[in-house]
Image 1 (cartoon, rainbow, N blue to C red):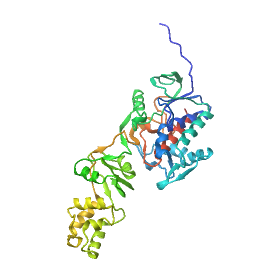
Image 2 (cartoon, one colour):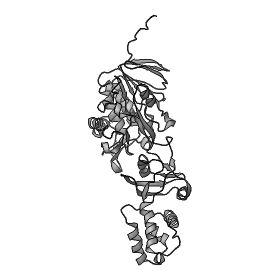
Image 3 (cartoon, helix red, strand yellow):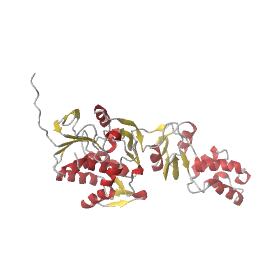
Image 4 (cartoon, rainbow, N blue to C red):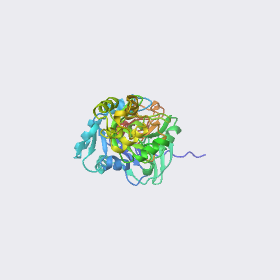
Amino acid sequence: MPVSPVLPPTHDVIVIGAGAAGLMCAASAAARGRRVAVLDHNDQPGRKILISGGGRCNFTNRDVAPVHYLSANPHFTVSALKRFGPGDFLDLIRRHGIAWHERDHGRLFCDDSAALIVEMLLRECGAGGVEILTSCRIGTVGGDGPFRVETSRGTFRAPSLVVATGGLSLPKIGASGFAHVLARRHGLGVVATAPALVPLTFAGDDLVLMRTLAGISVEAEVSLGGARFREAVLFTHRGLSGPAILQISSYWRAGHPIVLDLLPGQDARTTLIGRKAARPNAQVETVVAEMLPARLAQCLTGRAGLLGKPIGQTPNAALAGLAGLLNGWRPVPAGSEGYRTAEATLGGVDTAGLSSKTMAAKAVSGLYFVGEAVDVTGWLGGYNFQWAWSSGWVAGQTA
């Protein structure tokens, strides 16, 4: 039988996915003189960047450190974050004249539109001659170095293939398990996935209470095991949301309660007993409403069975029970809002099969996985974008 000719590569590097990690990787590789093609099925690059941070893109965090990431290997992020950290990305921002500002918890945002970040990445890619093809449906991916990618816009061949297709969160902008399928096909493991940074849903009496409180936001400390976050908590018609809830959702597992301290830094028992002595005729819910929104105070006082009772006639033991709700309410979520609203994906391509220095597959020469496709999930607040920049940059340095 005739032997099929070995066709020459069309590029040095093929990047599948024109998101944060993919564009950074392409720019990094092209700056080294590599011929790079970026392929994406969306009709525009950087869609997740454009909708992030309320349209202003929380592009990194001043306090980035490995402790802010969840992974089966908690040390995996060390090398990439050290080689390309928040300071390096800020240098890039400054070179392009993008104005930015800092908000609480070290979060850095564009002063203007998130589109400026996408434009910056595209200019960096353009300077290196990167070919970016959008509306490019990926078909079969063959070979194990050199690789062959069949698409709706032609066939691409290269000795290096970088998979930057993200995780499963926000399917409305094209998220899929493409990276996980490809990883398994090449013998890499995939850590079980779950929605992360996602609102939590409730059922039963807890849901009835939360629906009554929908729209109320309070600062609270939410904890689970050793994880603890003090930020806003928002009551919704389906449960709880807000930054503190999104943070703790990455640690939550089915069947476990979360702990809400609605008066962080304040001993509710001491406060209630003190006000009992000072104002014995005040109703319990009136006293609690001096510390929390009135509707929330009324609901929790009612749950404790003290609604309408003068605080002076309420036993200290009963006040201690109410204080337990105020400082340590333990509702059990029924679930989460799922990938539809999740800002990130837990799990992904197992880091055991990847080099932490280059993001390359250890057993498959020329194959790389970057960004959210990998089993690395950051906290809310710019940490996931920094992982995209860091992992994409280091892959681009060797691809």
